[in-house]
Length: 303
Image 1 (cartoon, one colour):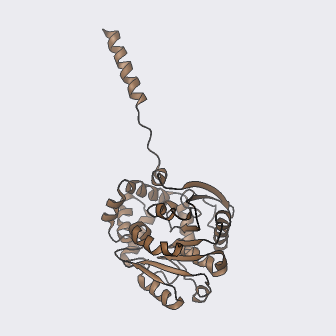
Image 2 (cartoon, one colour):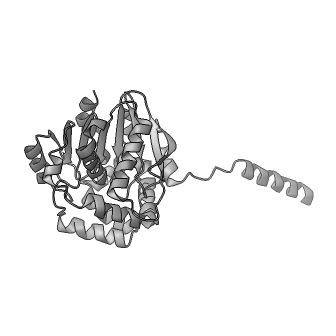
Image 3 (cartoon, helix red, strand yellow):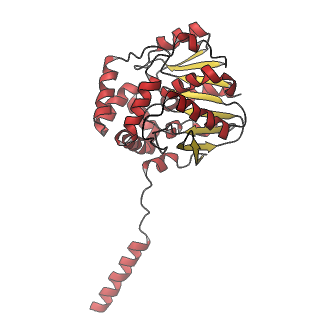
């Protein structure tokens, strides 16, 4: 009887081991799962860079904002990849890209972008830049407009002095100095017009989205990324330089942006003649918070 009980236990143990579920993927893998892209690695300006690539057609390059990664475009990549070649890199010291020993200079980052375009684009791409990514794109276009087919600046830094709403500045500082789920939630309530709705819409993607952004904020790359912001994001680009951008340029802005107010975009649109598309019920990230409206603004540009 004892032997029979032991054998029964052995069978049950074996069955348990055989049916053990696989360990869950890390947050990045969970965010990228199911997207119509593959992850490549390119050496660009001496920086090992993670790049998401997918789709066929005219190229579109997506540059994310500070403290993020190419995964931030997850809600719009599937539609963009239907008729375009999507190239979405992790900026230096962000995501899965290499963290340089020191913050790369502006010249090095612009060289990095030039090499990315040369390596991955069969023709001058549409370049879509968000916040820091937009500032990098604008600085690139000042000297190299001929390398681009169209420039799209989304709630972009560098067009005016950075003067966020006081509560935005307070929660941003709290998150950067002590990144946690609690400080991230408070900060995101300033970055998003309706965070509760966003959480419901993203569903199972929300937890890995938060986890991956926290990983980035707690990583060694966070300090380098912060220095990149001070070097390339926060300083105002001189108006005379912006006037030298000769490639067609479009502005997309959230009406309720608390970091970079709509009046910044309105002033730039008036001064430089750049068309402005305002996204209603949206703060500083239309591609994340209002993907349908963002795509309605972008797809006509892509043709």
